[in-house]
Image 1 (cartoon, rainbow, N blue to C red):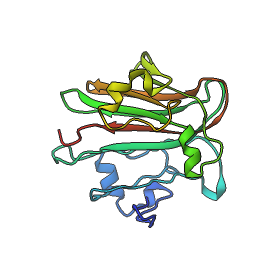
Image 2 (spheres, one colour):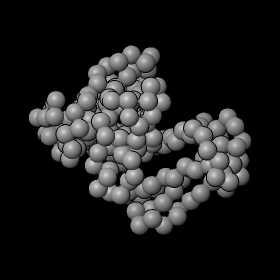
Image 3 (cartoon, helix red, strand yellow):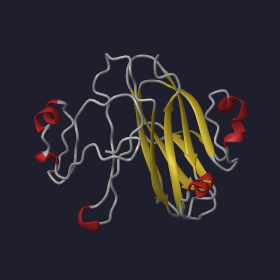
Length: 202
């Protein structure tokens, strides 16, 4: 875990070695495998980056999760985003979103590809397609260009900078959802998938 200036705040290899092992167990979110990682703690409002890498430069598919354990506090996770590589076919990037509570939450999901080139990212995905799916994998809606819903997205002040990028604005009821990003033209490339809680104080 890195802070907004890039400084290393915490790291973990095997979760059983964490100094907060007992807190991780009490949370009910301890990983099932001792080789998996976990960190528990209180963080101040701000921007953070989590880097997931293979030990000894190993490669493979990894899943990163973040949980807000204190629902009684007014502070909320406002945005979670992740960068991944999309290949052809079913080699997609998937981001899971869990809505808690009893009321729907105004949410914006985005798939950012072409504009990553301006940030120095090599091989950005040129034409992403964003799908919002329910807990059973059923398609709720999809978007191939945020301008298909320009007024709705612009009203949230979260419009992407490139018309080829995607955005979905939706009120989501409590439950589990998936944001799936795939290529529209069969190409491969790097994409950032983002989930925003539009009014995190509510």
